[in-house]
Length: 205
Image: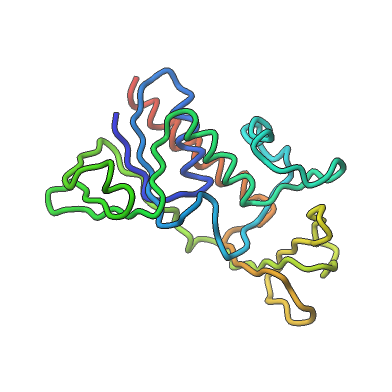
């Protein structure tokens, strides 16, 4: 089964991870305009390393923040998932984009064009995540705690997510996220990907 994924995210990588660990054969292509998986100038919510069983299996791909700190940055989890999926057979096309033709085939630009043709057909298309759902949260990385909800990142910085922008102290990095609770962001993304993959696997039985 040929699958085209139009987004590089923790959700879509979890989807790929679940399929590639099954006993069925999948040819999965993922396109991203970025030069590296998980690369972003915007902060995204991190998580505890026990947030999901899948994350525990990926620790070997992540830098060790320190021996006492269980917190993992979002980008570390994202990158570790990408490394594992590529090792299992995911075709990750960096610096690439896909355009749908009138006949429902796809044409590719960037590095993917060197591998895929101009009229490629796929059995399933995975669309980008709907980011317009839920409340808007503002995230910050700072060298000091902003409030009681600040999480120690283990390198002398703290990650904080609030419902209102931060204006009192200087921050090193900022980002926004939509949902009910940023602390649950990674778990929710993984579970969504696993659920979508499980539904697909069930439909093939």
